[in-house]
Image 1 (tube, protein in one colour):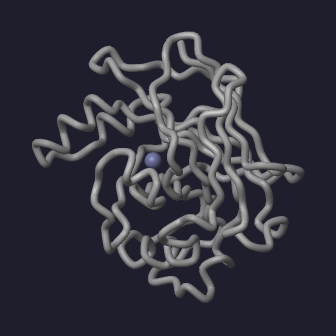
Image 2: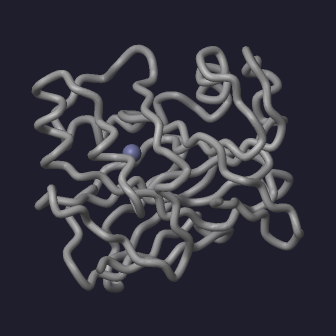
Length: 218
Ligand code: ZN
């Protein structure tokens, strides 16, 4: 079973579902030529997709184009259904950084056919995930910075004040559809700058000043 860890405490949560937002930063929507949705676009990765720092991303043989997407990750500590925006932050145990590894060629084919994305987004190793900084450390989740370097070169650098749907609304909206449970993880969408990885790449993602994640591509 995959677990999420809170730094500097012994708290560990068995990871439940991983609910992800697509299209939550305008500049990223434009770079992929997508439309800006009125409601958040949601999809789910299985908990088996998680790897931790020091582990290896393995690109499935049915894809020739695997993209990185660096994202702010939320760890749910207190579950709930129909959580209000006003109380949403109280349900978060910690903040971390994740990579939403995406088989872009496969996803584009599925999108064209109107088919679900799971095999492009939920394969084994598709969700590298850092440890989580305790929520108490973060006074404003819309004032965070996420960065990604590949082989030492900066590829993505975004701030959460550019989210279309802020963290409070994301938690409230998701909980109106899926009951949230302790150990569930939410990925909040990627800023612009996505692109492909190749064999041997070393990825270093950072929730700046708070958490880091280092993985390599097989
Ligand atoms: Zn994503």
